[in-house]
Image (tube, rainbow, N blue to C red; front, side, top):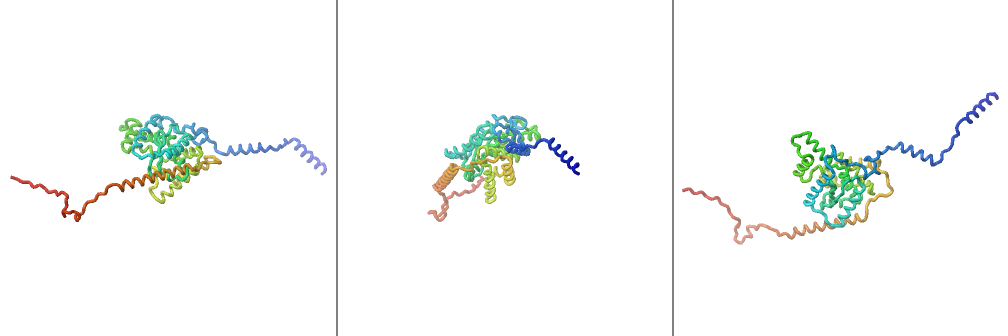
Length: 351
């Protein structure tokens, strides 16, 4: 028995002497290993892709001229400028320098933090309609109604970022190209003049082509996603884009017709809100600080409300000062008769 125990002790001692020593890892190395495992578990973002936020400004979001887009950037700018001139002559623009400079500054900050390859011209339209739209080539219009409904600067920035995204991704000319391809496939003998021919036919019917204003569901969802990135990159809280959608959704339910027809043609707000929330949670790294609103935004909104109220009062005064016309009653006629001319049929006399 003692001999067997001695053999087992000797074998165990030999095993321990041959086994490699187990060394404790430093804390830094343990943390590095854990971070490597976490990085391997997280989905990788392809450099330069639509999900690569760090590459904003150098990504090829809109693409160049080709089968998917028949229009060069130069043509796009020229086309947008022509339609912008039409709009400028048919709408009432807000001329107040404080308001226009503030809105332009917000927009240009977003443009600098976007993938847009064109400069932007931003104007404010005097309209109660809650809307904003951008023409090809960077001609951007914001309705005063949007400024008054937005309660935070980040809400306004979110809507503007969405429209900047349409221009950056060149949705208008890409959609026009799709329309041209559909025309070629359906009536090839009638199609003449390429993309410009289609634009001219559209413009002849409604002034500004609907392809500049009403985009496909896929393009709208892409503009939502890119707009989130752009407002985030510009320093604004992307959550404000969601709160604005929820707010106008409640307004529309309370008072149908609050939204402009163009805005209402977008994908349903319910689906947009859920998708934007998911993208905000999973695609955008959290920051310690965001811009939500500023005192300057509040001052501009107050100034705009005062100016618009003055305009309404002035219009009412004009109506009051107009002469009132009424037809005199029979009893008011001192001659007791009706002074209106009497028409009689001429009798035909035959010889």
